[in-house]
Length: 183
Image: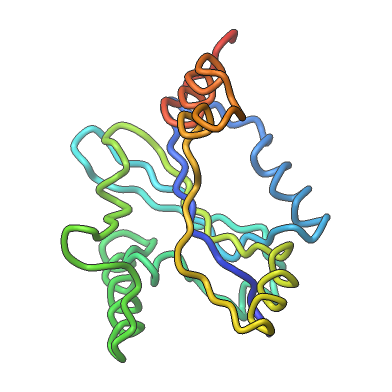
């Protein structure tokens, strides 16, 4: 099976108020064949930094069997307590054994778990971007390749006239603080 471009997104939740909206939106995107959630973990980090991990997914049974638990292997985190964490770390180490580096090492390394603040919850979503497959394939046929990628901050969009400073502050607050305005 060909896999489209894949992205790991880590979403933080301060005092989460889950009403099914996030899952409904992911299901809508899946129904439109825009994205597929390959794997998802819910992580709660208590005030002392101890973790509770739960596996989440909107995969079909067949897809879940085919893909397995990929987020844990990718970042060295598993479910089922310390035994599961050891299994996740082992799976990540095995994937890297052949010289494949899952994430950069050294000062540029991304420590996903360390980024989750104590006393909060996080959803780790491994998302396949189906919409991008035809574009990626066309780029490859033209002998093109990805050099880098990143999300652009709302503040950077002010400089090119796509947002006002006020809009950028509001969007940044929504994207990074876990609070909403007017609620």
